[in-house]
Length: 297
Ligand code: MG
Image 1 (cartoon, rainbow, N blue to C red):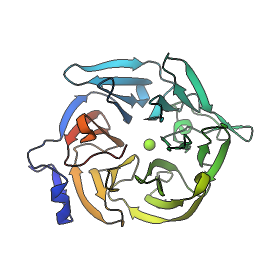
Image 2: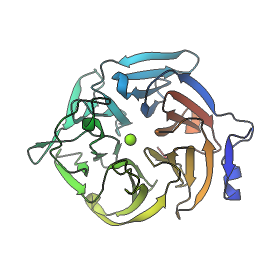
Image 3: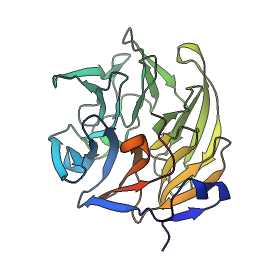
């Protein structure tokens, strides 16, 4: 069987026919938020319903990293390499400092509690951008069922002042975010409220000085499934989660090909030596595949 589906012949150069999509670990409930630490030679990822962050080390396997994790979901690293995490249970975004101290980056907006921060990225100016859909407070499965106080927005926290601004306010449920390599574009997935007629697409925005956004056209409609988590490679191709695997989308919005994964994919990240390996969190399992590509960051 092939692990790949080529749509645009150029995609054949992105993958290696003899590189398997390998299951690294399984037995989880809903894994999310992979983030690679090359300096520590490990991957961290969330097992959200089990309220824990796990660590995978090549040649060693899985061990707990943080438990309980406040139902952590998406993670990234800031420009100083520190872990930045979205937490459903505490309805906040945090940074883990080098000494292990946890600092709250955002938990309120205009005096109201955030919903359940889902995914996060950090720009080169230090600004922290995150999505805040309601999934983590809608049920007790991935957090604590509780009152929604704010619409499902995308926020930007200024890296210098710490000031929080709602920068995208017309989404149903914003989810994964990714910058183009030059940070002139921002991609944001809308995964809807999980009703079939809600939007399930990726929108693209132009980013100007101080994070000002314009545009917002639909960039690509993922099918089947939705674009939960996304990452960009060094040539600006967007790699997105989907129900049948990972889809590679060219900068002009067309589907180039797919990595086929046997479980619904939630999120991805580049890592490994040279950032040429794509780590894939998919429902109950962690997968990885080596690509002839490099992650942008
Ligand atoms: Mg997500």
